[in-house]
Amino acid sequence: MPVQMRLSMCVLCVAGYCVSAQAGLSQFTLVSPGGFFQAGADPASGGGFGWPGEDLASSINGAGSMLNEGFFSGIGTATRSASASAINLNNNANGSAGMGYVLFKAYNNAPNSASAPMGAANGGWKDTFTVSNPSHTGQAGFLQFTIDSSGFLEATGFAGSASIRVTAYKDNIQLMANQLSSPEDSDLIGTDRQFGNWAIATFGNPNEDSKAVRGTATFAVPITFGTPFTLGVYGWALAGMRSQSGVGGNSTALVDDGKIRWGGVLGIFAGTTPVTAGSTVSSASGIDWRFGIQPPDPCPGDFNIDGVVDDADFVIFVNAYNILDCADPTMPDGCVCDMNGDGFVDDADFVDFVVAYNNLTCV
Image (cartoon, rainbow, N blue to C red; front, side):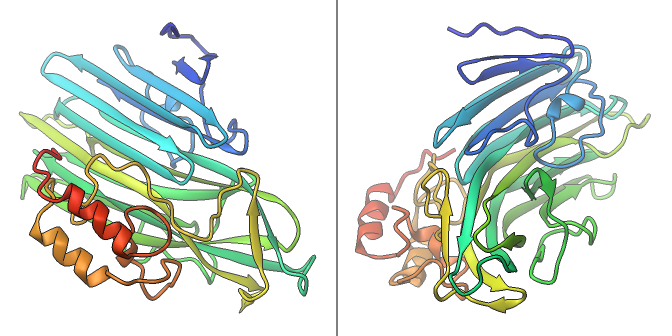
């Protein structure tokens, strides 16, 4: 059995289990193919956590904090949880990461006078890709793909703040925005990088806010045909406070049922000209990344993420039935109903939905 330890300026990893205080896992240390997951809780964090995929230890390092992290190689998984408490304060986070997905939850309840308390989850995956086309070997181009995000955000009090964010890196360098990338309907946080971001915060009046997240961001990684490169995708769930103040009372923040997942390859370009025909995408993991990844689902069939599988989900399934190619960019949402992950919505998925129907214990 691995033993939990807290180390200063170092990290202990045994069989993929890591606990650290000042230095730990990040997209920089991750070996392809593989992934990592960090769960952190801190009554008074150091703040300054910049982007998903960076080391959460830079923020989860206050007195009474807990950081629990783990990595996996190949097509494994990492699951972690963390919790912390102080007087009139508690926060926690948990979740897991595998190839093509991250699942997470985070919560914070703290006095408005607390210094940057948070529950935070951070993780993702990396693989080595090679995009080939015999007519374009050695030429520059782009691999365009989508990342789907979903979950529920809630914040109360004077300064509650919650967010889900996703970004991507090529060869450990964050992808910068280009003409083939777009944050789509997510909340803007800048124009220079590729991301998806969904966030809420309370500002005293009103003192409660919530948001159901269901969005897709489009990414485009620069490639050279025939040349391998690593591509990493990472997401976070943060539940904390937007500011510290002398206002009385507590603020809360919640990220529930957070999920980011690989949505599939949207296009392959030589320069900015589509060349999907004749192109192939291979990976060191052996995963066929052309199609979306369906992560393990604690509530299969709950397509509208309301905590039950009922007639509302059946309507969504009926509307998606007979989608014959989940890589079709004109059908960005229907493949949430591809319950067996084979790239189609058909009778096999209906059988799975019937089994899940009337599950009233998802929450």
